Length: 121
Image 1 (cartoon, rainbow, N blue to C red):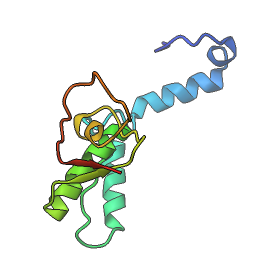
Image 2 (cartoon, helix red, strand yellow):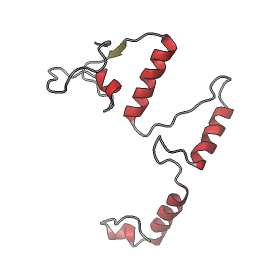
Image 3 (cartoon, one colour):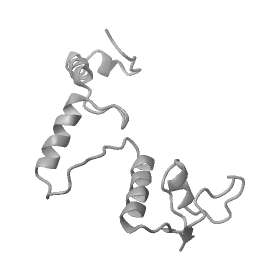
Image 4 (cartoon, rainbow, N blue to C red):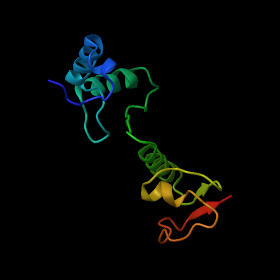
């Protein structure tokens, strides 16, 4: 059973490629950050087993937006401070905190800045 239809016949008609897709779909190593799969949990355990003491948690974001959101939260938690510096012309993603620390000159029509403590350079 095909899960998708690829427009290029050389892919769909190649039994080796089809088998690789089927094999990979059967164990789904990473779907998205809200779903933990057995291979991902095994990797997390292996990773934390070789890290220094105290580094015993991992997070596997699906997007750069999620990674930047997590980084902002970690920075604020670790430092106890609130301000975040964003660079002019930067792009950090589509979630609210990353959007608040990106700056585009002449930005209009995008609503209020969600993070008023953002500072731009």
